[in-house]
Image (cartoon, rainbow, N blue to C red; front, side, top):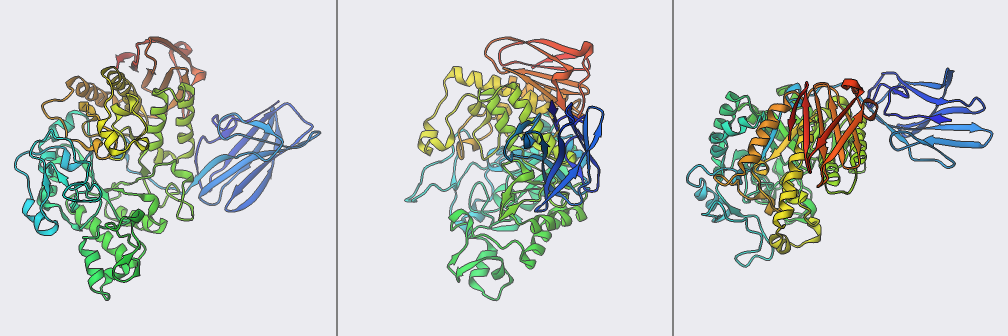
Amino acid sequence: MMKFDQRYEKYKAPFGAVETGSSVRFFMETDRDDSKITLRLWADGREELISGAREEGGVSFAYTPAHSGIVWYYFLIDGPEGRRYYSGLEGEGSIYTEQPDSYQLTVYDPYETPDWFKNTIVYQIFPDRFRRPGEILGIEEHKSLFGAPRIHANWSDSPDYLPVNGQKHYSPEDFFGGNLYGVKEKLPYLKSLGVGCIYLNPIFLSSTNHRYNTADYMTVDPMLGGDRALAELAAAAKEYGIRLMLDGVFSHTGSESVYFKEAQSNPHSPCRDWYDFTEYPDKYRCWWGFETLPEVKELTPSYMEFIGGVMEKYAKMGITSWRLDVADELPDGFIEFLRKRLKSIDPDGVLLGEVWEEATNKHSMGGRRKYVDGHELDSVMNYPFRHMLMDFFLGRTDGEGLARGLLRLMENYPPQFYESLLNLMGSHDVVRAITALAGAPDRDSLTREQQAAYSPTIEQLDAGRKRFMAAAAVQYMMPGAPCLYYGDEAGLTGMADPFNRGTYPWGQEDTELIAYFQKLGELHKRAKGGCAFAGRGDVFALYRPEVICMVNRSCEPVTACFADKDFCGNIRAELANGCIERELPPYGAAILIKGQEERA
């Protein structure tokens, strides 16, 4: 018999990722004494073999990692049967006759992430679509710079999605007139949801409604109210205990930007060195082939100092947190520079990356990215969490699969990084949560015209709404910062961009759904400490010291029952009488907090 399971401290201690220079103990449980067991590790491009010490019940190994990064490991077994291997991608392993895939050990240099972010609720706002408090602002300024904007007089219109005025391709140049004064007006509403941080999609001067083609980092778009509106919003939000997070689009600018125009017109300008011209001045490297988005050379010293100055400008307004757009397309050295500059301004500023995959072993730009190693990001947008929830509630995996996937993230991430994950179900880049959970087709399988025409049935939407509520119970009880995409709590639906960017339905909100999220906001305050997961069939459960959350993805009622030993995580579950049993309604959730049960 041989057994190793890296999820439990009996076999690997400490749990999960470890700091450089710390001692890690591995233990292979075995009743065989006719085999030599060796720990084989691969780190820093080389192999290391560690002999074990016989103990009662098995063989132990001690390892002290010297450098941050990923250590891959498995066990060599040399015995009467020849050489064999013991490994597993996760959990309890198996014996193999050929070299297997390895276990992962994440090693990081000591660092801290802001405590306030670990306990907050984030609300993401697409500024043009959240709130128009009066007349539309900045039309003349926009016209003088980019041409007359297309304005929707009716707030309840659908966003444009087809080319207009002889255009060959759709261009997101239609505006509804939402602005930062509108966000300021609705701060009491956001506070009622428990929001502690507002993440704003780009707000800088731009020709488009999404503003990812920056024209001037030093100017807040007049259509959003300009610098004055941002300063007023930041000051008012502070009074409510709410911080702001800006969207830093630093991998490219717009072709209409003041920097690119200067680079094209003046070959001696410092801006000339920011761009990679293949044939000056008209041919250049651009983001994913879009000529309107010239890419910058981020490691150009003058560009780095300029972006540092951008951070300093908005820090004077009290804004010191940033979400980095396409972080996997930013060099490690640039992200490290941003972190140093930001933390020198405000140690409580958060640097969050847009990374769609699991961030510890993400590869791009020719190698493994060092996001989690202690010198770059505080954390990332947790898209894997969204994928796992969707897979569970739509029947693509079961409760055990969800528990296993969430545990893998907990194991791989440094604890301070894990506790700062932005746990989302919706964003400006994905299908609206209710629509997705109603069983919408894959976005890539439909044209924009087909997405515009897609409409779930009433029954599908009802199921999607109920699944969304149950999924949100998990989201709000998880470690990390739950992120609510504007309007999801009010019942907004829609396929992918631009249909996921509709206007907030003021006056037509789903008030029951809003009340539910207000309640979750209160319950979230109790979701602290370590966490453990369990799952079986249609049921998933989450345990924290003061919280137990159980959800049923089935359209039928179920009796959910879990014992202490069914939970696995960075703490040990301690249930009254050693187990918990609850009746869960169809698509239902139950949240138990210190003996007081809440039905979700």
